Amino acid sequence: MVVVVAVLLALGSIAFTLIVRGKDVPETPAISPTAHLEQRKAQIYENLRDLQFEYRLGKLSDQDYQKTKVDLQRELAKVLAEIDAVKPQAPVKQAAVAAPASKAKPGSTKCPHCGATFAQALKFCGECGKAMAS
Ligand SMILES: [Zn+2]
Image 1 (cartoon, rainbow, N blue to C red):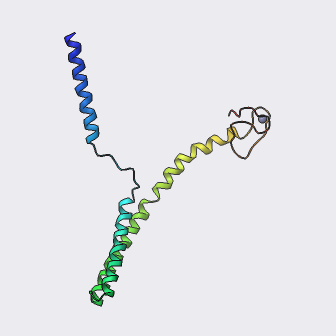
Image 2 (image 1 turned 120 degrees about the vertical axis):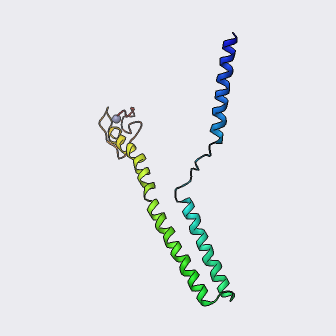
Image 3 (image 1 turned 135 degrees about the vertical axis):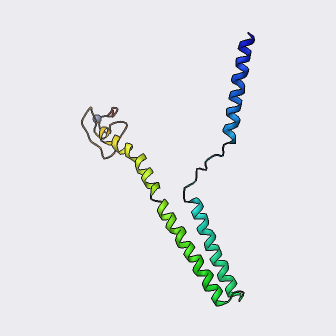
């Protein structure tokens, strides 16, 4: 009996440790891989606006304004290029998910009972009303 209790206590503490550890691990944010780049892009746009604002107020010399503007635009181009490089991966994933659905289509667009065919997959035949098993 004592052994059973000891084992249960041991298991309990292991489970407790695992649960606590699981909570400690930072959750991987389910945001898009371009999220931080989009954030950076927004920040650069804001800096450009601020720069233009300050220039209009006469706080910046024409030379400073042009130089900073070029720097920001160069950085912006870099961020946009990075976003373009990352983005094409997303539609590929969606296509992979969509593929099985289109594979299932041919089997269920033709009724096995009366032979009627339909433009899209149906659960029940629109002609005879029977189940459209593939
Ligand atoms: Zn039918």
